[in-house]
Image (tube, rainbow over all chains, first blue to last red; front, side, top):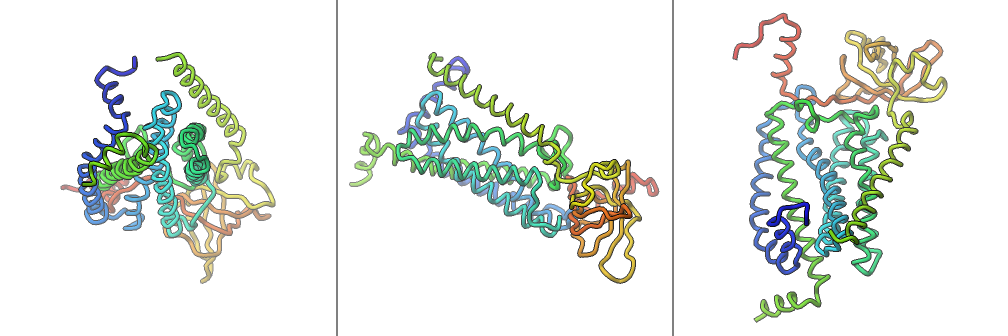
Length: 254
Length: 150
């Protein structure tokens, strides 16, 4: 590993060992859930109660506290999934394959939430539930990519082969990520341009921005929790004949 | 890095770059079709179709919204700050429709050169702020009132 300093390399090497990963995530889980709940309650209280109403949309704009973090997560999780898939392909690390497939359904859920909340907001504000502009269409394609990844994985019985196929599909779909992000700048769209993720100063008042960022971090924690739970289950299923699983099961049953 | 791994890494990088380039060229050639609406300048330049439905986007000119009669018919002018197009629409307007707001209308041009809309969608801008901030910004821009003393 010439890319990383030695301690980082050792950390990843240890993490890649299934028994160590299983034990460590078990210990981390209560902390992750605790931080997530604090951030979620804080973010929702700030967004739905403390933040002032918008000058044009009144209280309707508050859907951004769900919609925007979900949309960010849909892109973020896809990138994580594709990178884990690539690591799995190149280094043949079993855990990377598991992280990739465990991310897919969480990412698909966030994409679905982003599409549905956007649609609910679009009807009163734009006057339409759905329009085929570049942003909405590319986000819908992202949902289909996630569903394709999940479907392909379940269609192949040998899970190591399935992981390779899924990683290639995920990597092909990566091209959609910059398209979604820049769609509102490259083409005329009905969807508005970026508010926070641009080079310029965010065009949102700071009293509204702080709860939004809190929710974004809370959603990141939720993703880690949901992905790790799925990964642990997938790991147990794949390693059901391994010695460490047998030892763990026999030790727990007195 | 072992040679086999390096080879796989290069293969994957080439695949992603290749697909990116291909999709980039495809999107470039379909650029016109990916535009959700025509601007008013496009319409004045005759780029928009004559008999078919198309979408027209622009800002509603301040003071141009008129309601002749008691019905739902409304007349207004759209601009992209260079050319203006007159629009006629009968129906319910979305919440965010107001003067100075960006909108997208779906319809066609009639023989008078007026755009007869069948559907009007409001385009929201990317600015979020409390009403008080908007009010003080407006005062500062208009210069009629001194900036508020906090």
